[in-house]
Length: 397
Ligand code: NDP
Image (tube, rainbow, N blue to C red; front, side, top):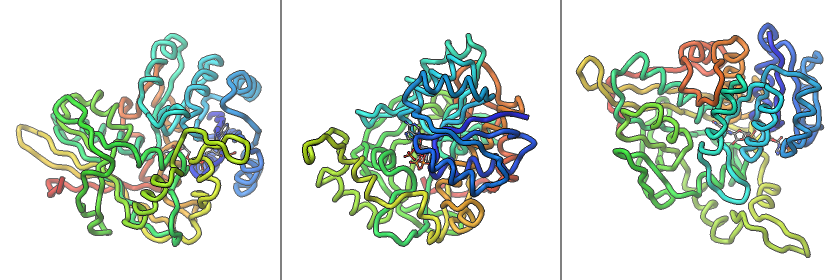
């Protein structure tokens, strides 16, 4: 049915390509290109049967990207490299007239700040060129955004309060590791907190607001209010929301390590001189931390991510909790990666499928909640991320 060019060869890519390769009737041809071709070759070799072609690419160089896209001629480019590459890949897609999908919004390298403005600015150009860009198609953003759209479509006349809850109750046996790219992860969780409240953004100190929340099959876990990118698009696309917040669980050990890393300057993104050359502390730190893609083997336990929503249906107040629990061990058994890569890679593959089937296809730049959630939700159940619903329960938030 379609030809896909995937860029980036990390944990998320491993899962996305694995899933795509298992559905040849939709993903008839796949090319995997990344900075280090050897990593692409290793993923392709594991999948076997010559299903995946590989190539070397520096996705920060638009002319090189354009050349690769023109020579391979894909229907869609799937960006599972890093957020720094988003605009370069979007530029190359625009120049070649090819659709675009990613899992994380653009972040400038020199500033730990992410917002959709940079990518939304492409709206008119994509619309005029007749090509589709699908933004934020991982789990959060991604599935949480689709859950919200599904709740709005089927369970509420008006949604008022949204709390996205993200729990990783897994144990990888290492004293400290991040579950996805360490640089991106540490930049995200050390930022100030921020949430939407009655038409305004409210800022908090990092990890200032926290409380224990109960996660299904897992139990209570201390959960910290942090800012997360889907809040920006969800309050825009669902303007009846009075409040929107994001909670993530962290263990004490993780927070202590994080504090030390910050206190000694290792989370810094400004260059420092070392041995006569400039290095960026957080990039050096990434080089010595465990590779998130390698954590899977000894990872035990579950992730549990979902949306807790309060609003009105047929004139009555109601609550709704929709979530997925994903086992690190099962994810590893199937794809050789842990559940955080799995829960991001599977939705990226499903979003790509939605485009190739012509279901999520409209000229312009869109966040995933702007498409019909139903066919995506159906595929989540088929492709390994089944969802559960609880109605009129205590949401705790
Ligand atoms: P990894 O660090 O494991 O993989 C990133 C890959 O991108 C690496 O293979 C890297 O190459 C490649 N890359 C980096 N720079 C370039 C470049 N200039 N040109 C070509 N390739 C490049 O990251 P993850 O797999 O953990 O994460 C991938 C993406 O998914 C990130 O954007 C992350 O923010 C996002 N994400 C989204 C989530 C969601 O739920 N929405 C959750 C988790 C992650 P090399 O191998 O040479 O280093």
